[in-house]
Amino acid sequence: MSDADDVAIVPTQERHVAGFNRCVDAVARERRWISLVEGPPMAESLAFVRSVNAGGGAHLVALDAAGEVVGWCDVARHQREGFRHAGRLGIGLLRAFRGRGIGRRLMEATLDAARAKGIERVELEVFASNTHAAALYEHLGFVREGVKRRARKLDGAYDDDIMMALLLTEPDAAHDRAR
Image (cartoon, rainbow, N blue to C red):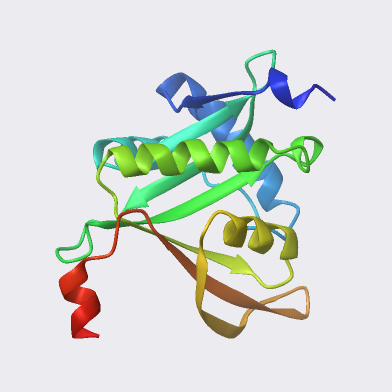
């Protein structure tokens, strides 16, 4: 297990996509943290990274000392008119790299990159059973906006899906007065 300081957070380039794809697959196969239960085909991962980067979003990866992808975080900007100010966050870390502050560093860097690209609102969904992640999101300023009860039923067990969001810009005073 390498030290957390040996992990670099970098913008995702096409040379990282195979590692990103392997990482997503490994996290998905745990059947607990993300909505996927296996990683997508390589072509879909490549198309996703290209889409996020070309669409004004942010996609970063965490690399260990050997340059292998051990985690990712992305904010995919919404493409529909009226919603382009917002994006959806996804994140995952390989098991051996959890609990050492890498996820926090990865999220902070990705949120900074999203802010720099003009994204004003970041949304995410987290399973209620993932209490550590929910606590991290709240610590970073995300607020709970709702709960989808029994949103997932996997292996005979239900899990609620908590919807959270973070506003990256100062509130609009006119909007606040209208509320």
